[in-house]
Length: 294
Image (cartoon, rainbow, N blue to C red; front, side):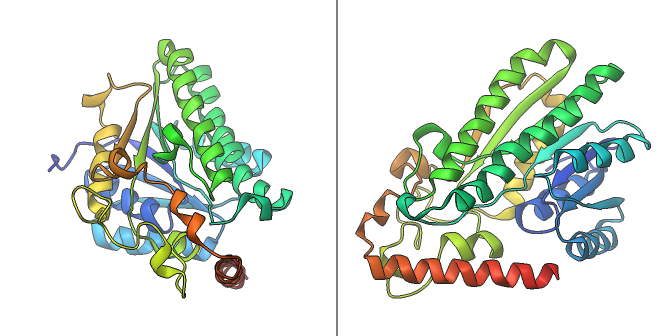
């Protein structure tokens, strides 16, 4: 749907770009001429994704292994990236989330989400922003949030709080940095199935039928999102032709949140045993991730 050279000459950094929606958006940017840098905690994953997408699209992909909870590591990465010239855009995609009753959360569990989504997103954004300002460059930041930023959500409170904070940052900096030629926007996706997120947000078991979002009855368009649809919206937001859009949060959820709020309120039907089963599945998914990271 876009001209082939829409993003030609653009350098875009995508956090969490090795898997899921980050990988999908990276592919979309490459297909219209951008050079993309992807970063993530697992070096093998981002390297394999880069190789796959370069073969698939003929574009250029660079990789960095980084934990975005570490502000100093981000500064070092940005210094290295800027050696090849300033970025044009940043996509804040890296995130974490899982289902839990809030009273069951430890401070470490809360921080596991908040440190990535809230702190990490700010660290990345500010690292780019201050370099754009110092160099007199225009910049573009696109953050991936959720529809919960408008109404909150039970059972994913750390994520809802953190994503709401990212939205506040987006709106505040759109005003503060707009005069400097830097614009900030966000996308709020509905259900776009990914392996990593679904392992923590769509557990299976005897409680499966009680979980919202197992079907599509609450989505007016009666289907989940398709990954290329999200990539199309992200590509649209990257283009200079859309550079008058600033400070917006755009939902792409088939109308779900207007119909059902798109959150997890229905989990009040779960029993204590259900929650134990969900917690065990999430622990298993986390252990598998640690194993893959070596």
